[in-house]
Image (cartoon, rainbow, N blue to C red; front, side, top):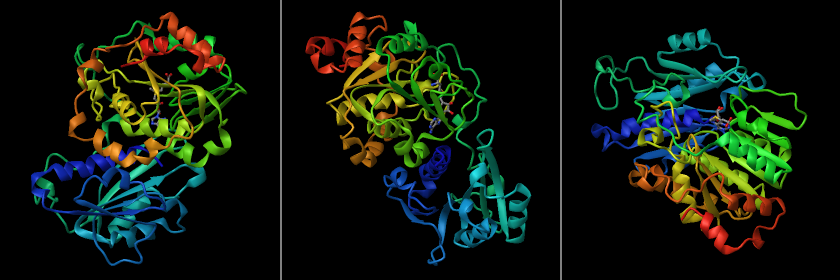
Length: 423
Ligand SMILES: C[S@@+](CC[C@H](N)C(=O)[O-])C[C@H]1O[C@@H](n2cnc3c(N)ncnc32)[C@H](O)[C@@H]1O
């Protein structure tokens, strides 16, 4: 499942719901998909009810918003499926269609084809955007009934300058540079240098990296290694390397059980910079960990609130991954968290994972509700100031890495671990 569609969808619906005119309007959403994707996002919004089904053939209900996710690629006639589904739109409803061009999963839909389908069926194609690179590009279309010219807040569509649907900004690269204050970074040592120290000392048997981009951190590992990224800009002939051009959720759902070693020594989480993705990546990777595994999060220390916005608006962008810290502290007090003062955006080392502990997965919906809520809108001063952070050249870190290498975390003194621990 691609990640950005959920962000676009989430942004779109949030825009609608925060509009005062809509406070009394309950929103009905149909998720036409094989799996349930939206519930964890919107179960928190009691004004939204979600009907999930791979087809709407068995209902006469009309919806405010219909999302067609992962059924087109399996349909013999995807255009007809869109027409049949759009009949379930309320007069001012919207339908968001995702069509993937991924070679092995093609919908065979074309831009001309979808335009003709809309014209012939009184549908208006309000916007289209595409995303992804190479052989994994995805198209998104927003359709509505041609006769409807009102938005949900009863303003005329033609009068509205601020169009309802735009792709979430973090999928575009055109981010303007902010002021020096907004773009500032900090850290004693560059994270890639610290990674070299880790690999040198830990000499892991295997390594998993989520989010590899140009392969800079991935390349440092010389052991058996797995990289996961929906748009990697890196390839290698290294026989030790296995790269999956997939979003991490897809990878864990469909490939990890067959492709990953079950006792990973070192895991680096550096994919989508949004709290819920980082959390899911943690939940999914921890299943493949052992007691002496090392799990590291990147982008944990924004130096300015703007860098931590969920909607990217600065070149230095950590998103709200920082929320992983209070979340793990609350839900997983058994973990040892060590913050390392690397540039540009700090690292969080997680020690003592447990492959059988499912408390995060169990509380996932509540966690999302809490940490995406109003209480966590600004980055705490302690995080911006990197309080209690450990220098990457601290000798106790080497002692720790040596103990992990020799699988004897339990032999380390509690004083040493307490000194390194974040709080
Ligand atoms: C900051 S870059 C990674 C940099 C790399 N780890 C390094 O240090 O050299 C983040 C990468 O995460 C990838 N990404 C975005 N969403 C992802 C997802 N859902 N699963 C896995 N990777 C994702 C992006 O395509 C991007 O290449």
